[in-house]
Every structure is written in C-alpha cells, then in structure tokens.
Image (cartoon, rainbow over all chains, first blue to last red):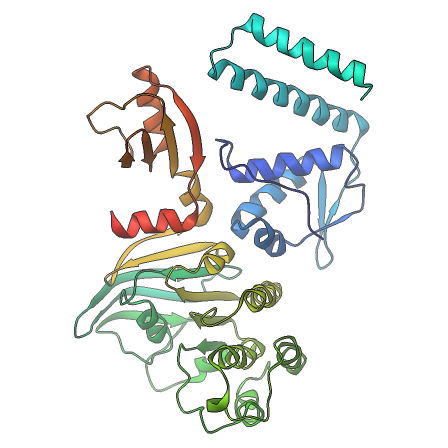
Length: 131
Length: 283
C-alpha cells in the first residue's frame, strides 16, 4: 500500500520528523483507521527514497507514542488511539500550518496587520463559498 | 549486531591506482552503494570481497571467517553479480541454472521462475545470443535466488529499461525482507540505486572519502538563494556559490552567519543525491 506522504525539499524539518508527523496526521484524521497494516520499513523506504534507518526511527517514535504497534512476524499496524490524542494532533497541525503561512508572509515583509487582513479575507471567502 | 562483512585496513596497489586504506563494516538489514567516478576502484572493492583480488594489506571477514586461506566454505554465504559474466557465452539460461542452483543450499526456485517470467527471459538461447539488457536480467535471475547473507551487485541497472529497473528495485526490496541479509552494490551514480540505499560509500581515485548515511547527507547539504549580492569573504559551510546562490555543507553554521550579518535568504532547498555526490567528487 502506498501512503500519501509528501516530503518537502524546502523544509528544515528533518525527514524522519516529516514522515512521523504526516503519519500522525493520517491516523488522527481517520484516513488510517485502527488495525490498518503499514508498509514494512524497507518498502516505505523505497517509496519515499529514504534510508531504512530513517523509517525505523520514525516508526520507533510513533510506536513509543502509541500511534502504531509492531507484532513480531506479522508487521506494523495502526494502534488504537484515544480521541483526545487525535484531537491534539489535529489542533497542533492546524496551528503549525497557520504558523508557516504567517512566517511566509513575514519573509515577504508583510506587516502583522496586513497578514490579519489577508487571513480575514480568506475566512470570509470560505464562508461565502460555503466550503 | 555482528557485521556481515568487515574490511580492516585494506590496501591494494594496482597499475594506476592505489586503493585504501579502507575500513568498512556491512551490518545486517542494510543496503550500501559504493559510488565514484569511472576507475575509482568500485568494482575492485567487490572483487576484494570475493577474494578474486588479493589485498596487499589488511583483512576481510565474511560472517566472522577470513575470505583468504584454504577453506572456501564462506563462498556459499555470498553471491556476486559481476559486470561481465566470464565463461557464460556458450551456455543457455537453463544449463547455467542447472550448474549454479546446486551450489547454494538456499536456492529459491520459485523466485528464479518469477524473475524469469517478469523479465521474459528465454532460457533456451545461449547467453551470447541474448541482448545486453536480457543478459543483465538473466544474471540477476541467477543471482538473487541464491539467498545468501550477502549479495554483491556490480552496476545492476546497466542496460536496463525503465520498467525493468523498477521491477529490479521491487525484487531487491522483497529480497531484503527476509531478515539477516545485506546488499552491497557498485554504481557510478545511478539515481535509482542510490535512492534504494541506506549508506553511500564514496570513493575517489581509490581513497575512501567517507561513508554517509543517506539522510545525513541530504540534511547537511542545502542551497540558498538571495536577493542581494553575498559578502566577498567565504561564508562558513560554503561549498559553492554562483551569483546569488549558495550551497552549504553546514547549514547550521551558514545560517548563524547569515543571521549575524542580517542577510535574509529568499529560498532554501535540499539538493538531490546526484548533485551532492557530484559536488563531493568534484570540489
């Protein structure tokens, strides 16, 4: 199974961390429900063109945090994750996305006031579009 | 974990090349690629592992036994696919299989048949009558199923078309799933092969430049773009610059310097592996 993970070339975030966070988001968002089998370390490292060491590190972190489970001889599966934990992942992802947008705007020399304006415009257009 | 293969202080003098000293350890579960320009000594390194070339100095161990010396029992634990198969021309794929399979106790006939089928290899034609691409595929079909602890592949993607390369990568991934194994490949910068690797051993004219874990290499090489001209002095970490573009092999120090001097970059990007290897081999 191929996972919809996209690694960014322009991020300073280490690759294992990008993989870890995107997997968390897929689990919290319900795209990967409990019990879903995950690709083997070697298979995912081929798909993402990373080393197996990087995938192993991401999987170990996720296992430690309770998002996935590895059963000897059977493979790695999505674990049972509490709703509160899922909520936490979603909130922090939204925060992070908005923070990145603000940083981009600041790097183009927009002022905080201007950024607020843009933000309000985007929100308004969403309200009107009903999306 | 015990290494599958170990090089200790290996040196070898050839006519035009002095290889080493090289220390190298291949751990189970890893894929390593030896990269370097033509004539850097990549194939010789594989031949040293097979004891086809004898070192002037140092030791090579496969699964804790020395590869030199009279006992050649270690040979059933290693498979080697050379660039050129010597002595195969007169034989058909079928007879080559009948010759090779009994030498390896773990020979996987099912895998052999699957590779033959996937690559559409005619087993009844003599090796010399096959195209270079098909020869390459047959070599692979006769090497992977040996199921040894260590697999050595010299330029495995040579002459292969794009779909065949993809199939080869899938076979390699599958082969690696079976536990206590490792692969060492030699390639002069095939992107496909590097992407599949965990470690890159970079050789330049026989000298070992370094052994890099792939993501470390990517994380430590960044390129920056600027709106303004950069200071004339060398920026910490600077590897290369062109007008308003800078490549650094120490992003942390480069960025600290830029912050300190109030220089903002307009874009930041990682380099791809081929670019990094080219920089290492040419700068």
